[in-house]
Image 1: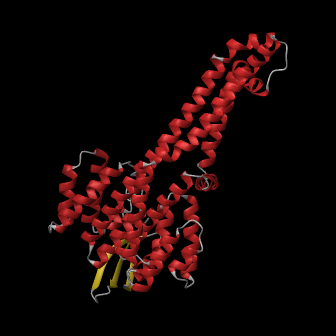
Image 2 (image 1 turned 180 degrees about the vertical axis):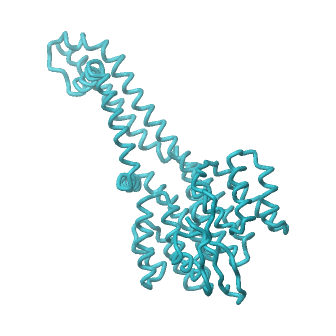
Length: 399
């Protein structure tokens, strides 16, 4: 994207000149007006730098550490150029050293910090760049970085909790399937000759297990191929917007995990909204950013609908209340925040509440999954027992 040099009057009445990266001149004016600045002039600046070549990957904890260190240095009064130079020397990640070096050179060349960050969208997401941009204009960059750090820390912990929550039921499911396959392919074959020797009609459970055994023994390679094709097709489908939406929708409908996923997304929404509102991003722009940041496609679609209602003049709480994917607690707290002028505090409270709920759910995941596992295990054991003992009982009757 090209750089644009602008001249404008900020809300304090001071004339400022700087550089902004945007797709066109209209977008520059829109962003300046959104920051409550009066535009005097906008002119495109030709740049010889090719930043699109930077497609480096950096771990989240590296960016998290960088943000906290930069906040500390800026709070101590160290200029940003000097801070970046020092952070470049301290970071052990070679990729991130290159990123910091580029940002450092870009700022020295006249670009704003937020514009330099925006050239690395895979490393610095929209919420990061837009929050920094508002912090630069309002003179609260240090506090903005602190809010971003708190959000990223909370979000990183929640991601870990979600992975931990899904790990246990996945292992249990794989274990059950594995035990069933092993029993069917190793134990049942030893009894097949005895069952057939009776000459009687075999019970349905025995037929089912024998059918599974013959399926594995006669068509094992074909089954593996079919399973591989199905898995590949599902993975490719999930990568499409429609497939990802369908998967997220189905996950939200699961008995236990669906409620857990709902809590995770409500907590992320509240934390995101709090962070952007606290850093001064407008409501409409905040919802645009949240649509890019929230990973669940169902919630992305809902946020688009809510943003449209808000732009037509509806209250935030009333718009959220019409969606089935947000909780009544969030709606009530948002409504109280709008009426009392304490929306930030209410959103923060909701986020912290659901953070604790998610942590408690992860801690109690074993007890929540146990009833489901017990039912599945019981059904499997019953099927195996009936398949084994029903033919034996018939043989005893004949004898």
